[in-house]
Amino acid sequence: MSVRRVMGTETEFGISVQGQPTANPMVASSQVVNAYALSVLRARRARWDFEEESPLRDARGFDVSREVADPSQLTDEDLGLANVILTNGARLYVDHAHPEYSTPECTNPRDVVRWDKAGELVMQDACRFAAAVPSAAPIVLYKNNTDNKGASYGAHENYLMRRSTPFGDIVRHLTPFFVSRQVVTGAGRVGRGQDGREDDFQVSQRADYFEVEVGLETTLKRPIINTRDEPHADPERYRRLHVIIGDANLSEISGYLKVGTTSLVLSMIEDGFITRELGVEQPVRSLRAVSHDPTLKHQLTLHDGRRLTAVQLQLEYLDLARKYVEDKYGADADEQTRDVLARWESVLTRLETDPLLCARELDWVAKLTLLNRYRDRDGLEWSDAKLHLVDLQYADIRPGRGLYNKLVAMGQVERLLTDEEIAAAVHQPPPDTRAYFRGRCLEKYAERIAAASWDSVIFDLPGRDSLQRVPTIDPLRGSRAHVGELLDRCETAEQLFEALTRP
Amino acid sequence: MAQEQKQPRRSSEDRTAETTEAESAERKDQLDEDIDAILDEIDEVLESNAEDFVKSFIQKGGQ
Image (cartoon, rainbow over all chains, first blue to last red; front, side, top):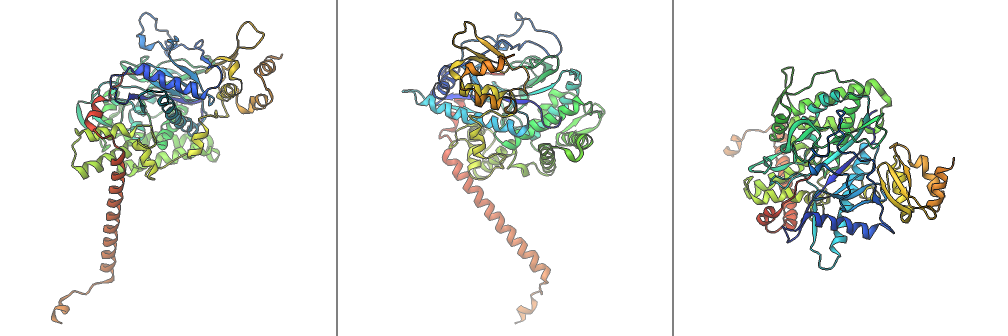
């Protein structure tokens, strides 16, 4: 493989009810999700089907017993919280005390960013619909990862991987990559420490919330490598690597490089291509040290005694990736793989010269540039509330108020996608995964769909006593190439089901 | 007249260097103006009471 594989993101948004700081965030999150469901989804709302979920399965090969699991780890029990599937194949729901959007399954980094950005539009619409309810206080959502008072919430990535790859190899080769990739993928934060008690800028939103190297938890003792093993695909062939260390990105280039470079490194791990020793001493402490030095001069100590900055360590991975792509594909490498390599190199080269040269591309640099301008003009210290406000409001998803969106409107940000492409992805599924089947079914036969999930669509058909479950266990089946013509042809869910089950 | 003679003759290189300097100063002024314009626009959308806003932005932990 290359940068291409089955993958997607899930984002928990920060939520605030204007003028009501003590409002219950679970209630507010449900209002947002329900308002969207009521306004956009026709006919009956398909339930989420939890049958295949196993959040306590561990990639190391054992199950955590339910009695010892923290209640916050239990996501598979339908708690009655809002949970819907959209016609673009995405899932919109309430997780813990945040509205969350999971992209449909995509096959390339550009599509992941496209459907991830579509999630921001879904949330914008959801807030608008929620505000239309008489006497409702306006709800504002933030695509960030911390309130700077001790709480953090996630922006996860999921990558389908070969089951045959030893998990130890993933831990060994991915840990140094994750310690260093924040120089490209970080979203920037004013404040240090989990509760933000120290006043200063850092590269990443999430770095201070990671406490162990490897583990199953996602809400406490967060690990650099998460071991949740819930493939939503044939478990004999695949695992799903659940990555919890990333920041939520507003910048399309940051998000594209985050997913593209990670997918490429995973390919090298699957093919046993990384033979160089790149392990870093004290990964958890190093992760924070890199984040806490926006000049990017901090030197990491490698197991072999070498001392490299995070940018230099990323350059080692880039060098390997160039050789890997050249060895494996030569001139036949696909366009996105070549584009990811070229942009990665360009960004790293400039980060080494002067990080501020990447202000048009990377979230943390764009944010820092804006903060520095305020510091220069108004003589502000890092403790000043205005700088904290700029940090928070950068992630406000409203087009007229969010500062990232303002920078876009002022032409200060490099784009990867057009507004039209993102808007279309609010309703259309990606064409080349099972999300196509799921999304089209929701669009065309909504009144006959009782439930759906990543690995199934469940029909409630007239004249049949029991529900009919159509499994979608292979993420690459159910694409437009497989079922597009069939879905076009079948006017009713009954016709579709008969065609699918005909011997 | 005598004063004029004291003026060192400028080589064309000096003139080029001076022009470049002037141009870059002009560019910097332009850049500063652009930055001011950006901050002015951002000022217009920033929440009005920064202190209250930041204090009341409280989230429950998530994943």
